[in-house]
Image 1 (cartoon, helix red, strand yellow):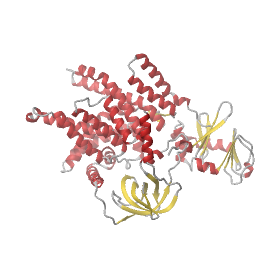
Image 2 (image 1 turned 30 degrees about the horizontal axis):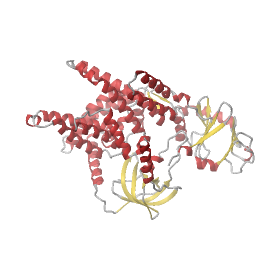
Image 3 (image 1 turned 90 degrees about the vertical axis):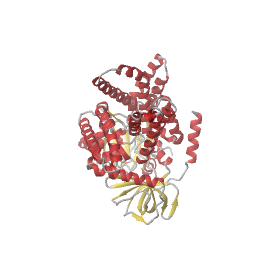
Image 4 (image 1 turned 135 degrees about the vertical axis):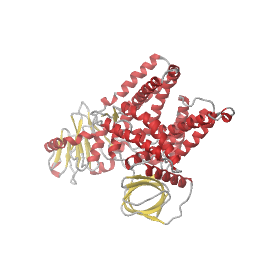
Length: 595
């Protein structure tokens, strides 16, 4: 463990690079497009070989380009951009993405303020250039054979591009607990790899001269590894996809060395390799959720797979289908229980009906959509993929309708904010539950896990929150945040509500109540609430434990905590807490920054 911390520290030191320390407006930016993702009405690009106002910058830029024509990998672009330093989290409760920006060598982010010009430039035709050409070709095949609603979903399944999917469909997938299929992950790569493995092995088994002389299992593993590698490249090689590929790679290599393809040892090796390459992955929600789920499912399967195999022997097809469906339910339930703490910590909501959402989706996605999309692309190269795309499109339509049906139920998910200690307790108790063999120790771990799981109910909601410019104020009213200004700060208010465990979709139904509440505690001079005074004018300088000066006049009165606009600007959102003895403390957005 000590070696792991030392190694991570050394990697961090070696990654040291500049990050923008002050926002820049209307700056001339030039650079080569290294990555590009497409969204409705915009594109997200990563620029390399960057020049800002004719000054060379070594790290990359992450830019959003709006209202522009085709921009592709390798283009040399030029335009006026607003650039921003790494932003503070929306509050102490929110997570900072500055660590990932640091490890990705991102100097700054921004968006265009003028038309972006593609400058004449001889594109370097490296391997990445040909990968993007292949991606564009695959996308063209898919787009020509599916309608607009279906090809956007198919893009997500095949090339990992989900920016074109409508927010309505994304939300229904999230609330029904099947959003994981929209991101290329271990599930996608595993399906492609083991579909190829099954097909190749079945075909070779029909050829006696090969089946009797060679180990067709190992030949199938090698061919599967080749196709999995191709899929990795086509999917865009995002970090979560690389992590998934390493897991599949270790499993297929295990077959070549006559080891179990799927075991806790192999998963541990995959995790070790991933953390060796990117130590910051351990902070990623996708890494945490994928390994928690896979560890739990494999641990369950290792102890029961032999029993299930023996029981299925000589049974009819109906019985086997029934067992399969029960298996899907149990697997999804185990995955839901083990990943819920992570979901609550990072996303603050848990889809309650995900087991039922996945019950229909898992077999359709695994046995119809992914195989047919794969065959459709392969045969589409020679113009014979239409029939496979028709079947895949039908499957996508069923999944869309199923997601909308599940999303239509009340209480389809619940909002809770998991504290850090609760997440750590859940993860450690889960790991030790798998490791320990003693039943008493396992029972203790179950109790510890339950205690960690219910920790959100012990999370304290701030008594008052105020953002970096004082325009949004939230007050804890009976365990719910009430907001002063939802018209100007709609997205920030939703973010705060979500991060403290409130339902963000319900806050807009109380705008009238919010207005009446703040009209009672606020006037033109100040807002006065319990021990807090938010000063707007020089006449608002009033005695209190906490004085927040939003005026430009200053206040000579002494307070336990005294803040002004400069404090808010530097430290971001302030969250104030009042204990049972009346003592007031606070946390800021800046307290959450570690870069």
